[in-house]
Length: 416
Image (tube, rainbow, N blue to C red; front, side, top):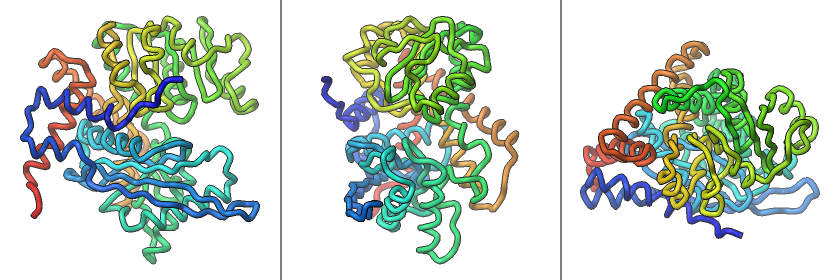
C-alpha cells in the first residue's frame, strides 16, 4: 500500500519552484510558506443511540493579505491538519490566480458523513460552527461546501452563526440554498469553470471536443456535472469512477442512464454495457482527457507510469502528487492545474458573497457571463506566463498566484 503523501510538503514544492522565477525577498517567501493561523477543535456529538462521540475538526487560515479567508469545509474520514493546511494554501493561490479579493482558508472534520444520520450531522455541524465562531464571519472568513458537505450544511452554519450574532447573516457562508440568499449557478460553478478552461486548452493544443475520449474520477458534484456537461458538448465519456470502483466503455457512457443507475444502486458498478475496473485500471486506458475530481493524491507514483492521455484537468484539489506531476510533464501531458481549473466554484462564491453583502440577486445569465470572462482571462494569463518562461501550466499558475499574494504582502508590510 502506497504511503499517504505529506500534502503540505507537496504544496510547498510548487511554491518553491515558482520562486525560482520570482526571486521573492526572503521574508516574504518565508511568510508564504507558513499559515497565518490554525485551529484544532474536539467536537462532542450526541449520537442517535444516546452515546457521545468526539470528532476532530480543523480550520486553517493560510493568508488573508488580499481579503477575507475563503475556503470549503469537508467532512472526510482521516483528514488531517496537514491536508487542510495544504488545501488552504491552494485556496490562497487560487483566489489570486482568478484575481478575486479573497485570501485562502480551509476546514475539515475527521468523520464519515455517509454513515451519520441527518440529525447527527446537524448536531456535528452546529457544534463545529460554535467552535469556529471567533474565526469566521463575512469580513473575516467565509466557509463553503466541499467533500461530503452541501447547501444544507451551509444553511446550518449560517443559522447557528446568525443565532449567536442575534441577527441573520446570510453572507457568512456561500454555497447555501437560494432561498437563504444563495447564488444561482453556484452548484455547477466549479464544473462550468473547469469546462471553460478545458475548451481553452483544447484550442491551444489543437484538439477537438467532438468525440473527446474522457475519463472522470469522482461522481460527486464536480465529477458528475463535468462529465454531464462534456457529454452534452459532444465528448465521449469512456470511463467513470466513484468510491466503489470504476467502469469503462470505449463506445461511451450515457450520462442520463448512469445517473439513474447510481441513484438506484448507490454505485457505478455493474452498469450495463460497461466493464468493472479498479481506478488504477481505468487510468491505464488510453484517453484524450482525464478529469480527477475526487481526492488528493489520486494520481501518484504508483499509477502514473501507466497513464496514457493527452490532457489532465484537475477538478479536485491536489489530485496529482509532485512526483507524478514530473512524470506527466516528461510525457508531454498538458495539465490544467487545480488552482486554475477548478476555480469556478470560488469565483461564483465571490459573486454570492457580493450579492449577500449588497442584498442583491443576480440573474443566471449574468453570472455565467461573468464566470466565463474571469476564467477565460485567467487561463490566458497563465498560458502567457507558461510560454514566456517555457514552463508547465502548474508552475505558471503558481507563479501568477504567488506573485499577486506576495505583492499584497509587500505593500502592506509586516505589523508591528
